[in-house]
Structure formats: structure tokens, C-alpha cells
Image (cartoon, rainbow, N blue to C red; front, side, top):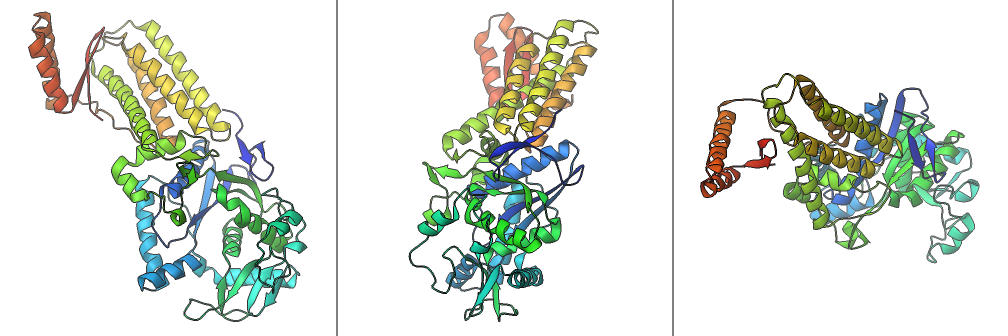
Length: 479
């Protein structure tokens, strides 16, 4: 396996992945704001970074994964007010629901999930230092970051400061030195949660929260900062400005990684637009594996239009992989011939080695899961055709079939996908199935096709699929 290359939003190029510390990856992903249920757009972003983590761990890196929870925010306060409950009650309820949904999606749990309300002292200290250094100023209990003091502002989003100012809203707060200045600390409003600070009671601004928590757990210059594409500006742009101003060090993050947005009919999926699909509903209807495969079949930086057709394609693709595993396990159950099949062994080995090499080359190229999945299905197609040439496999064939099963399962594990497999047992049920297959074969030899077809159809109704090949009949359980 070779070097890993990652597209860095900051430089807009693919760069060889070199970590701050050898063998370790420090990764921060912008997490949830628990004011409502997770939707499919959130799910895609979290799945992308889940697979990035899985692949890096597969390559032997020790990954330390931090994913925050923004548990105080205007949206939380407003929604709690609408529901007639406290913000903390809303937050606890939505966090519990989100955690259940993320487990159901098969996401690895972050090592640390810091909450904003548990890191107020760190946030206040960061704001204090920014004021002391001249990067921030107070206005009636509010504290703002002065973007004019940070010459590199706009480096992530590739926007010029003067053009940003020109494009800013006409109706700006006259107290601001610059229309792009953003809040680090907000003065308390009546009835809202607040904390004591040197500037009076209040609560943190949105952007300062991620900077304070990521610096606390990962330190400056950590390896990967991830999130959806719509966070590039202003959220991540502001994170860079305040973090590098605070530490005096650059870069704040080595690699900025952003996932493309999920769209519906070409429009961004968003709660504000009312076109979102709740993750829980999607999981109940389609299952985690079809959703994950649909997300990963599109390159993570590209937008993905969420359609029923795409999900159905993912389900059909999962069934093809399930058929491969069923056929492989069926061959493993057959009695050994002792020898023969050397030509098939060589072909299977060559195809498996090509698949493994191509799969990893795709993942090394900016985590191209779409290409990697294509390589997986190409191998499954070729291997299934080769399986059709076998009747009673030799020990060498069995060993290679086991290697093929292992290669496919390894790829599926990296993708976080589970495919139902046929057990390699020969219990009473399996013996009965084999007996019915034998009876059906004899009926076909006697040209009693009507009764033979009836047996096949009845077995299908019971969830047993028969496949007639040149070397005999194989069976598998319906996935």
C-alpha cells in the first residue's frame, strides 16, 4: 500500500498525508446542534468521516476522534420556547435520540464528545486573550472579533476581504468596526441561559466554541478538521482567524476536509427549507447498509441527490454482494475433490489481488469510496462467474475461496457495511434443503418440469433461492 493523499480545502489541492505525530491522527468533526432530529444530510457527513477514520485505523494509525455537541444556541433556545420546555430538557432529549440514530447507522463513537456548556471557562479565557492581543473588542457586554486585524481572513473560502465587506448586508450593527466582525461572546438576554464573564453575563458565540474545544483536546496544528461544505464560510473561516490569532501559530489545522451536501431535486436538504428526510425514518425504511452504500457510492466532496432510485440501486448492489458470499459459502460446504481446479485458483487469486490493490489505491486517492465500491462489485462479478466453473472444489480452491471471502469482508468492514451471509453449517435445515434440491434434480431428469418448478417456487416463498449452473444447483437464503 502506498501514501495517502487528501484534498485540502485550504490549498485546494491533493496533498500527501503527513501527520503531526508519526502513527497518530488527531481529527475534529463538527457535530450536532441538538434542537431537532438528525436528517439524511447529517448522516452523509458523519458517514464520510466514519469511513475516513475506519480506513486510517485499518492502515495502522491511532486515530483520536473528537466530535463536539453545540448544546447552547439560538436554535435550541427558540425551539425550547416553542415547545414550552427548558433548553436543557430539549438538549438532553435530542442528544439521546441522535445517539440512538448514529448507533443504528453504524457510526463509530467519537473518543470525546465535548459539550459547549461544559467548556465555558476555556471559551472565556480564549476571548480574554484575544481582547488582550487586540484582536477583539467589547461593545455593551458583547465581544466581537476584529477581522481587519487578521490579514489572512478569507484564506479558506478564497474570498477577498474587501469584496466580502462590499457584499455584506446593508443593515449591519452600527456598533461593529467592520460588517464582517463576528461575535465571540453575546450579552445575556432575559430568560436565556447565561454565564458570568469579565464582560457581564452572557453566552459564547458559535465559532469560538469549536476553536476552544478542538484546541483543548487536540492542540494546535492538529491533523484533520472535518465538516460539511456549507461550514467553510463563515464557521471554519472564523475558526482559523480566532485560533491562529489566539495561539500565534499557523496552521491551526493541517488538512481541512469537507463533504458535499445532500440535495433533494437539486436543492440543499435543510430543515429551514422543509425538504429534509429524518434519519430515523430513512433507517426504518431502508436500513443502515443501503443508506451507507448510497452515501459512499458518490465521492465525498461531490453533492449527492437523495432519491428513491439511488437507494433502490444500493439495495440491489448489496444483494449482489450477498449472492457472492452465499455462493462462496455454498462451495465451501461441498465435499472436497482432493485435486483439480488449478486454473480457477490462479484466476481467482489474480482477480483477488487486483481487487485488493485497486480498492486501496482508490481509498488512498482522497478516500474515493465511489471508485473503491466499483472495484468491489467488479470483483464480485468476475468471481461469481469463476465459481460457476466449479463443482467439487479441491483444498487449494477452498483456500482461495476463503481468501476471496476475507478480502470482500475486509472491504465491507472499512465501509462499515454488513451483508447477510449464509452460515457454513450442515444442520438439519441445510440437509433438508439439499434433499429437496436432489429430488428436484431427479424430477428434471425425468422431464417432470412442472413439479420441479413448483418445488423451486415453493422454496423461494420460504426464502431459499435456487440457482442452476453448469456444474449443478446452488442455493442461498434471500437477503
